Image (spheres, rainbow, N blue to C red):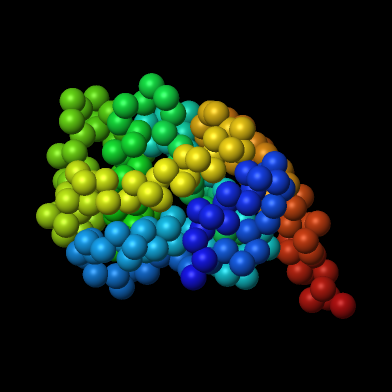
Length: 235
């Protein structure tokens, strides 16, 4: 399996234009053990593929560069993400990749990204993703959010001892640093930031209508829109 993060570096090198062809397209598996693996390589591979969701046959991919402590990322999550998921990701039209970027000044961004990746090693990245945004005010105000993260892991039925070890010891620091370096090389310095089909960039917490217009246009251009499919069925 190729490393998703390494594929994302290709976008940075080609000024957001290089494709994801050949990148792993495996969605997280709910069948993974609840114990976070202690082997760094195994943990890294599982975490890397867990933050990618959607169909392998999707027309194109959306990349989100995000920070769990970022208020505008939370705004996007609250106002647009669920609708994008319902309309496009869950229906198999697009796939979705989450890339972590800890904004300077967000002191809890690194450990929160670590918590999501550690959860990803057991197929629970998106569950932790949702909890971190839903409860951003809670853990964001905590002097040490570690206990909050461990509690969230317990709610997701993750083994809390191995999860805590993963977060405390920064087991997935190499994956986090690859993301951060890729974002910096791409010249991106704020979150959220989105790359659609390796061709359209959306900066900031745009509303669902903005994403809908861009996604629908791209689907039409790729012959993958509902109207296109209906027309083909009628021929």
